[in-house]
Image (cartoon, rainbow, N blue to C red; front, side, top):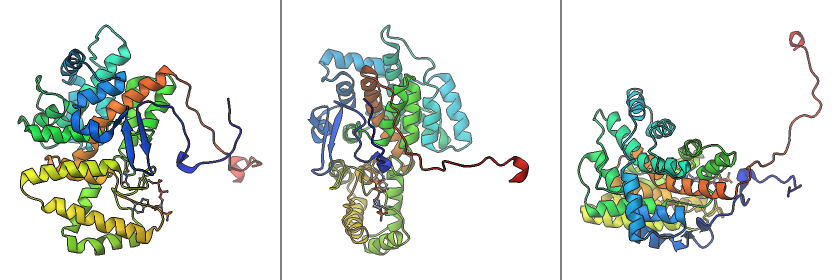
Length: 382
Ligand code: ACO
């Protein structure tokens, strides 16, 4: 069933390129549904393992299924020696964390423990289990510290915090991180998910699809925004300086990181959710200075974006409050994008399974705008 239209949609805006049961975004109403749940409910109630199981199996796990899933992940968290060796080399070269994650993810066909079931599912478990280990191990190596092996009793979120610091995290911090991971676990056909689906649609392997998705995620227009968003807040420093700073940035034609979205034309519901989670974390920490500054910068930014780009509806997106929340949990700005990947990899894998179950090669068309009648000129005569 080919379409004969030659119409070009820049950035594929509005083009429906997949059917999915995984998530739905209503950009006018500011609603996000994940596998049947409002994101708020999943963010609040589910562990990251439960949310992942829901996406992979289209049902919440029973207690027995959850325990089995947790054990399967625990058995796969440790990194193969080759992956660790690569991370050590990357740390010497001071490679950015997302690049190290991409390189290390490429090694994850190695040492994949078999469950005796589907090899693709074994790969999926290894990818999901090892993402936090890679990010934490590399972060420590970059700081000149030895990696901390995963704790066999802790789940994904708690382990991530533990492997960064060596201390067992407080329950509130674990809940804060799970809220974040569940919030970003899936988001319809975003650029990295689309990349993963394109790769798997060629009948390539899961590791290749996930490595491609990391490449798409790290760009500043997608998952690379939260670090720069918070750096901007730090540069602004105090609420009174926000307007002049933001105005100067917009006058230079620069984009404000953490604002605007292809689909949302209202405030991203994930921003609201993560702002509330951040408020809890900062309230518990007893210092609201940064929280209040971020709120003030947001208010000024949204007003100025309306002034400079009227009618564009550039509102706060998920990245702005990702930054505030993760920083409040003790994560450095450079770890924001890798932490996004720790959550989103579950969604990427679910989309790959979904694509494989009803696959057709993804291969769109292009409209030729080149020259039709060029003449060949021999090399010596050009
Ligand atoms: N700051 C300033 N201007 C902006 C911003 C922004 N954050 N976002 C969009 N605009 C402007 C564009 O310059 C453009 O203006 P013009 O029409 O005068 O040229 C107009 O708004 C429309 O922009 P597009 O690039 O066509 O919008 P698109 O839908 O492609 O962009 C995107 C979405 C990439 C997220 C954009 O809003 C952006 O660059 N935001 C900043 C980066 C960011 O926060 N990324 C994270 C996104 S959330 C996520 O991926 C998880």
